[in-house]
Image 1 (cartoon, rainbow, N blue to C red):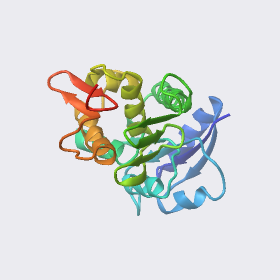
Image 2: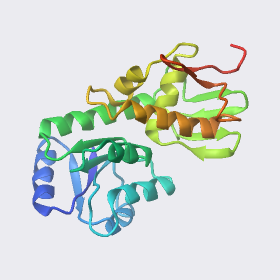
Image 3: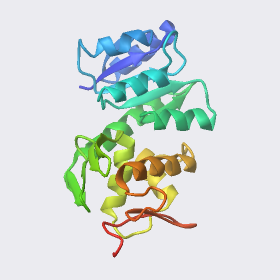
Image 4: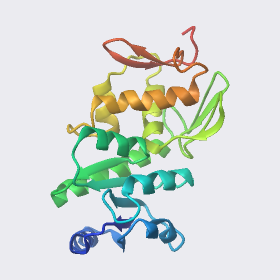
Length: 233
């Protein structure tokens, strides 16, 4: 049984969501403001956070960044009334795993939750990439999300790590933005192809010697991206 932390200041909505989520087999804890979120982690372990962006006090984007800054990798699904592209991208780049826009259908919410859990399982699974990828003095741990690159030890977000893993598993192949969006988010309402571009910018900052002249995570103009372990392959 998955345990969810629901962060929503609208108590009527929070109660309705809790009732439906519990009926679907989840355990749910509620908090109604941003200040309570970090403290709640001291009282329990959660499999996912449902996080409203517009909260009193500390907003959801700031909470997400703070959680990621403390090393908490629990998946975060943003709940938001804001549907503009910039907000979506900011949420995903701050460490969020997905977003759903109010008002939403509960079946859609269930689908998003299930997709996140499937992708978390894939990220931690042993497959063609294994749990650890090493190349050119770099190391990526797909389970812990830790990376050792030119700048030392750092941590990727889960979504950034998924992008890296998808490319690593297809070493030498050109992967389009749409392929990445469909594989990592898994549905046709894409966050925006700009999301992938922004993710690659950060990935290169961590894993390339010169992010402006990448040799491992390269762009194939007009087609997509390609991973290669060295500049000679």
